[in-house]
Image 1 (cartoon, rainbow, N blue to C red):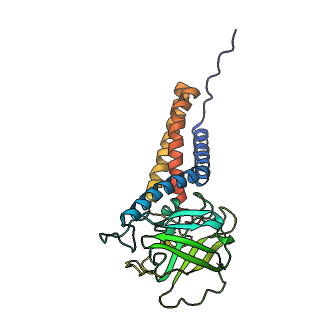
Image 2: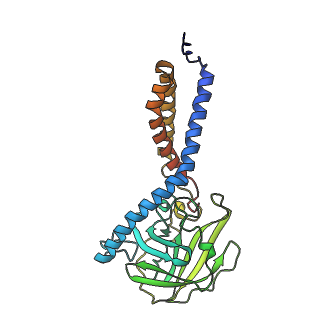
Length: 292
């Protein structure tokens, strides 16, 4: 006679709590790793394609931003495409968006909104991730003095020549003469996903300087989340609700396992837990440094 299946073992409340906690932690760890690597890379590619289409249309229509506001003088929202950065020597061809908080930099490099747009007189700063979400600035530390690259904005194509690479404590380039432009590329320094500092590449504008657009944001009014190696805590409330949702789902899965068996419970709850875990991981990434 075939051996009858064994009934599920009775778990004490303590065992159930431990199992639920370990399951949630496993989902979160796997979701976080997947989000900042494979899924993050795919998200970056999709975002860049969408941004490229939008920016090309604006260039053709003559409506690409040339200041911190739109043609209707409305402050640019975070994530608005403002430039195309092309550095052939290290394989960079990225749409630059307005804003530099952790969430915004998932789409690509970001223009720090308290600085001038590339090509204009004054200082411009573009920040990008070194590893996560495609790591668009993973190789900028390979740039050498004299190498040239271009940035395209609503005012045309602008050419820059690299001055050098610097880290914390290194001397800064000479003061910028009046009417000249300088661009600083910023990313994390150190092994992938383990930043040990900040790397900056200075470049001088060697093409015609364009008039500077109006800026409403100053360094003093720049949100903390937009500064170098900052984290974004604006959506912590969403993370709290997502964690509560995961806990409820896990408790429901334990109950279903005891009532209908492992196979049916697995079929119903694995997709739900996976989606919830990815959402939580996405929110956790916002709490990581924006240059990671």
